[in-house]
Image (cartoon, rainbow over all chains, first blue to last red; front, side, top):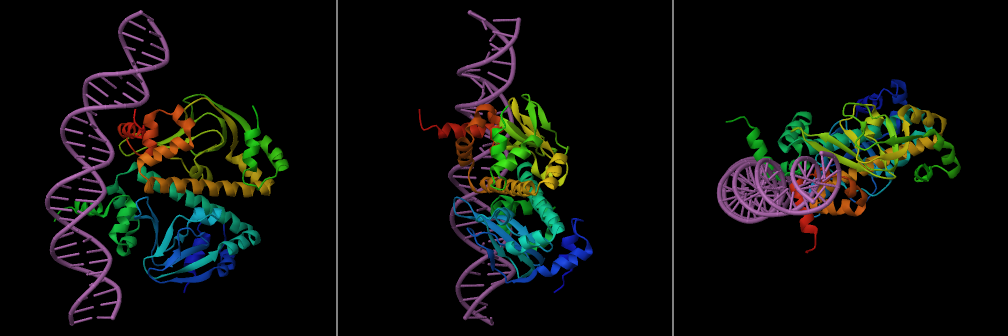
Amino acid sequence: MSQDILLQFLQSTGLISPEQAADIAPAFGPCHLRRHELLLRAGQVSDEYLLLSSGVVRAFVHNTAGDEVTTGFFGRGQVVLEPSSFFTRTPSPETMQALTDCEGWSLTYQQMNGLFHARPEFREFGRSVLARALATLKSRMLEMITTPAAARYEHLLASQPEILRHAPLKDVASYLGVTDTSLSRIRNAARPKK
Amino acid sequence: MSQDILLQFLQSTGLISPEQAADIAPAFGPCHLRRHELLLRAGQVSDEYLLLSSGVVRAFVHNTAGDEVTTGFFGRGQVVLEPSSFFTRTPSPETMQALTDCEGWSLTYQQMNGLFHARPEFREFGRSVLARALATLKSRMLEMITTPAAARYEHLLASQPEILRHAPLKDVASYLGVTDTSLSRIRNAARPKK
DNA sequence: CCGCCGGCTTGCCAAATGACAGGAAATGCA
DNA sequence: TGCATTTCCTGTCATTTGGCAAGCCGGCGG
């Protein structure tokens, strides 16, 4: 399995040189997941920092009525974790599940801390990743608040088309904050005509 | 004006000792805001890290229809900033405005970076603050998703009662994701009887 | 003391959304 | 292959929510 994606990821912030990246990459271990396998159960502490090289993962919680609500999708090149649980070492409210067979590179919290001490440039990188996670979450939150469901669907379709090929529509619906019925109507309306 | 709250804040993570806190505190400058004054305009980079010792601040964005939507309230002991903008140095989508006269202690991004270099324990503290900001945002997001508006109102009422004494209800309504009309009905229903 | 004005509530109606259920199609599993 | 399950779409109906406008109340200034 190629480390290309890992090297590319490490260099993505500009804080780590190609040589340093080649040096750090071996610390990551290969990770394989089978379809439907759980990476993380609600109540556990997220302990795996996983960069996906292939496959799709879904994160979800249960609402007060007991239904699953999808909180995120992850695809190739994205880091799969519950950042808030991982970084603060508190139990995750979310469960994460592979929607397809997946491959990637992973690091435990322990290993990451080791790297932080051994490599100052990786520590900076870690801070940057944390800041990006925050920015991503914020923009998703603002999107939920400021744009209607139909526009959010269009946006998801445009930005992560591969996800829609693997995720059941009911999961997409709850991710968008509507019922599967409504999503079906949205998709119907979006279809120009026929 | 007393630095108590600042010292207490610095020690809140357990990463900074009382002596170190007393050493770091002078780096913060006093900050005064008048009612209705803006701390940050949409499009600017959030550059001030402000710990409130008194007063209430509101953050908001504009939705696609052009209406103001409140994204957060801040009270005594809370850090007022747009973390995603501050830490990634990108323009903030949010505007922040004082709802009452405010006082607090502040640091610019520059000054904070200086402290990061000069004081390793403050760097750790900074990372912890970032992680907490992420956790806070996440839990707010999950709350929006998993609990109904009425329960969110009750929660806000219980956790930040002072905010409701200073914020107009229409701001509270948009913060909760409902119209002022609906909030009025929620409040009415909440009143046990009469 | 009076009248204006802004914030809040309330009633009425329309629109959007959800719950539920039936059925077609696709998928999984033996 | 064939049966069982899941996924998705659609129709009907009930509920929720929003838009609008009028009314109430309390503060402020003349």
